[in-house]
Length: 340
Image (cartoon, rainbow, N blue to C red; front, side, top):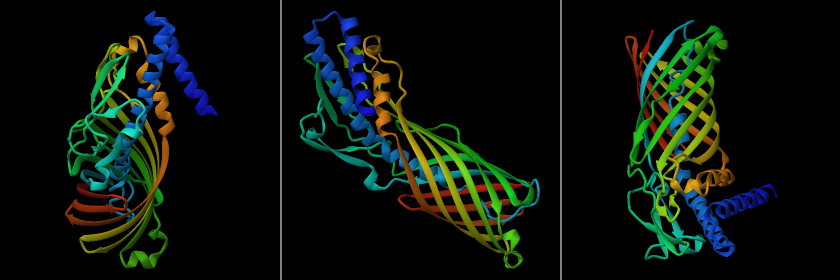
């Protein structure tokens, strides 16, 4: 019921603005209103299929490498590390199929069906066409990053506190991707449990748990074209992901080498919005605002269960660590750390 009321509100808002600004007859404006309404529905449908694989992948990228070691450190020990994360894009998430029957406004130019790229896909170009006020709209469908793997660096640091607690933080500057940007930052709290079992400490076995929060922002170039009202201003779509992560890890030390295995579960809230520059059409119809309201219907919450294996080797106060996370996706992480 609330969704129905919300959709009616959007429709009447568009119609009222059209009547106020255009001075056209009611029948002309009503037809325009219906055409723009169908365009908004199709844009919402396409945006969900296009960006969802990328935001799902962002969760895996943000989940990796939080715990460098489950062992208990001395009070106020500080670790700083430079991490390089490599995410491998699976083929199944690089494209999706669209048919003319999926749309109420658009058709695929010269085709009835096409396999088009997601945000993680190729740069193969397709065009979508439609009409507003008997004027043809021809849009270049958005392309993907066209990369089989995505690399981004970030900084991570931690400081050990009392009774086996440790605070962890990570931050990446905004990383430029082909046709997009990616950024992640967050903090976590670790606690060592093997300190309560002397037999485990004697055999160099370490146990710990971690609770962490991260925020992932990912954006891509989207649709932009010109109409009789001007350009639409939906040339960039952004996904914002808030993730809470719980991780349990165990490790075994052999002199300078430590092998760690982890089980990770996380809960992610996904929000989507258009964040491009204001279009000329906004002088007549608040397209970006209305689309962002419609995108609320595709907000979602997802749970992930991830396994992680890590190896860490010590050189004096430096450590080199390699990590592989696996589940729906595969994500790798290589870091160099220094302990003060």
